Length: 391
Image (cartoon, rainbow, N blue to C red):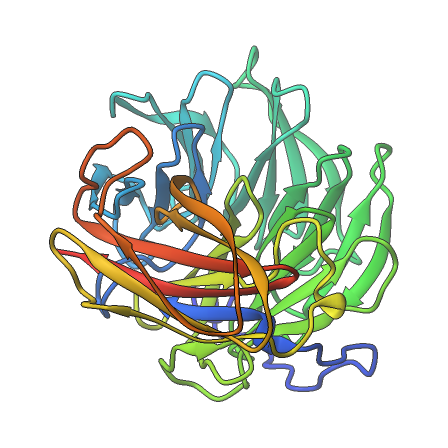
């Protein structure tokens, strides 16, 4: 693996003809972590909304709370890579250069050698029953299984071609498994018997995979793009990124990335987090599309010029927006992990510019803690999101 394991991986720079470009402006991209923050590899979100991020170029796994506070959760790993969580909240860490899987309790106690003898472990995922850990092994191009009840028994499940440096592993809500090859960007569906069916190919080098709301998302580390593969048989498409290396935020059609790598979706599916291997920054993609509405059906105009002032704010802010026609409007405030903290009243409004004050409090009347938030304004089938910061 060129960025992590070996220098022998060829850099494939050809996009397959099946990839097309959708209406990218339906998603917005923003930067959460600053350059050098060590947020560069595998990610997972727990049931409380905490985000865990590996620092492959280091020894730690960090945790970001729902209000955006980042701290070191556990240390002592050897190139921490993919992550998984069991039903009890224990975190599992692939040590890519340590040939082992570590386990970390919710309180932060580490068992470094929970599973040993797995060369180049990269991606991790639990089966739907939650009793077996699946491990992709980059260097040996295999997927292994380990039952939690017998962690000393590592079973090779799938090995060899067409696997070629597998990393990303993800189950969808129906229990279907997907795997992605880092070396050549091929994405496969995996049957219960272990047979592989190719679904798509993206520009290698492919980072990680995640599934949410009927779609599979994948990062292209070398292509500086994020892809979406609808799981209804539709072609794969570029979700965000221009292919240029950069740090530009904004509409997905204009945003740029620098080595997008890890990827995870919030429970709502309208927010994606992407780690950047080259910068250690965390990027956030927020859908402008209301839940349950196909992006192709969302009109291109109707709700425009959404702003907040002041921003950043300490105690209160005002949300301003313009309607091109009358609509019933609702405003929701979400924390960094997609959890709604406040819903402002929904009411019909005439066309024109409107200003709605917010006192910075959640639905229970408590002043929100410092951090980064997302304000989503919905008017009929129109939806726009904007970032808010409270120091």
